[in-house]
Amino acid sequence: MSDKKTEPEPQNPRRNFIQKSILGASTFAGLSVASNAHASVENGVEDFEPEIINEVDILVVGSGSAGITAALQAGRAGAKTLLVERSFQLGGTTTTGGVAYPGLFDAWGKQVIAGIGWELIKESVELDGGKFPDFSKVPRSHHHNQIQINQFIFALLAEEKCREANVDIAYYEFPSKVTKTDKGWQVDCVGFGTKRRVLCKQIVDCTGGAEVVGMLGFERLREKERQPGSYLYQMGSSHNPASKQLHRLYVHGADSTNSRTATLANLTGRKTILEKVRRDKKRLMHLQPETGFRESYRIVGETLISVQDYTSGRHFDDAVSYAFYPVDLHTRTGVRPKPLKRGTVPTVPLRALIPKGSENIIVAGRCVSSDRLANSGLRVQAACMGMGQAAGATAALAAESNTTPLKVPLSKIHGLLQNHQAIIPSKA
Ligand SMILES: Cc1cc2nc3c(=O)[nH]c(=O)nc-3n(C[C@H](O)[C@H](O)[C@H](O)COP(=O)(O)OP(=O)(O)OC[C@H]3O[C@@H](n4cnc5c(N)ncnc54)[C@H](O)[C@@H]3O)c2cc1C
Image 1 (tube, protein in one colour):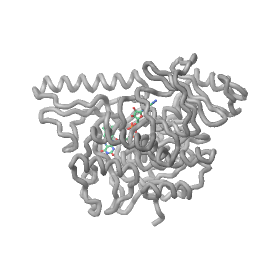
Image 2 (cartoon, protein in one colour; image 1 turned 180 degrees about the horizontal axis):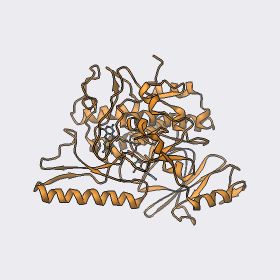
Image 3 (tube, helix red, strand yellow; image 1 turned 180 degrees about the vertical axis):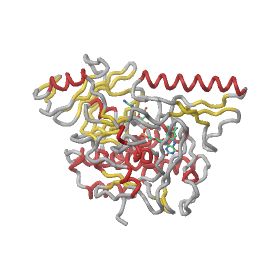
Image 4 (tube, helix red, strand yellow; image 1 turned 120 degrees about the vertical axis):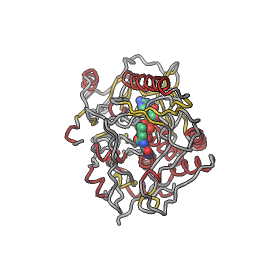
């Protein structure tokens, strides 16, 4: 699929109106607003009387593989951190989607992604009595070095680690309005029975589809045609977590960008699975709570990782982590992964995590600034964890010195990451 089909996101006229109306204003909802402020009012929630007000350094939104590692890194670096997740548990696609086979932590015979993400995976495997691949061997197919984990253990350990790192968790909530303040952001979050106002210095958007970035009106990219989602389940034999991968049902057209289309994806997936149960006369032994979504919006960052950058293993000057996976684009007819050339290990630059022209917000995970083909490799969980840790470290350092992520010296980011066992890309 050519990247030329990439389209900028259609603009929301209501949001434009609100943004324009505050441009140049000195106050908005009682807060001072910089003249180039971005703000948004979503979901019609304008009269917001918060029941809870949290003042934190870092707000992480979304708790998939990227969000967990970002929050843990920020918390362990001493930043007061709140993790807001619209679902009911940590882990995102890994747990709620059931894709409990993260890859790839190794490349060409050695480990390239470690740190907080690896700690979580390693402990999940150990506690569950599982097995590790031998990273010193180059496998015949990349699948052999994916790590089978128990999704339930992973979610529990992630919560425990958040408790230990003083990361507060707010489930069933999502931002409804984001306003720039002179100290950072005011983020109004809603959940059922809850209205929470978060005052924070930095936002780390780990929502998978860069939802906060979108609310702020920064540019995002998404194709007209997206990779199918998959609904994971198990029929016939019993489900033994981490022993093998669940069955996968493609959900074509799956769209995670709003509750209506996400509902449709779930209804479609579940209906088809019920039909299969009737047709195949086998017992349904396991069903994930929702569809796993492969592709959504990506940010337009200060730089964009192209497929040429990815497949040539370009070493970006501001590289903060490695990524490793074949180019892996699923279509209606399936997927034919294109392995990277021997010795190639792509890197992720800090600037691909920073929305172009933004201040005090950084992203991590599959919404990284990249073209579609590069993204098909970058989106995997080990890479998301590497990016998450880098984004968490950068946000914590930015909050500490009251600056913006782009202005944090790279040496400080690398230093903090190394103190937390991350692997920093080095020039070959
Ligand atoms: C079927 C399938 C198979 C895959 N196979 C593999 C594989 O073999 N190996 C591999 O490593 N990777 C695989 N991947 C890719 C990988 O699992 C994902 O790309 C990766 O987990 C994405 O992590 P993330 O943290 O960026 O986003 P996600 O895991 O999507 O997490 C985003 C989180 O943000 C939350 N959220 C979203 N919006 C909001 C909001 N507005 N407010 C609050 N919370 C919000 C979501 O509920 C979710 O918990 C696969 C993906 C799918 C779907």
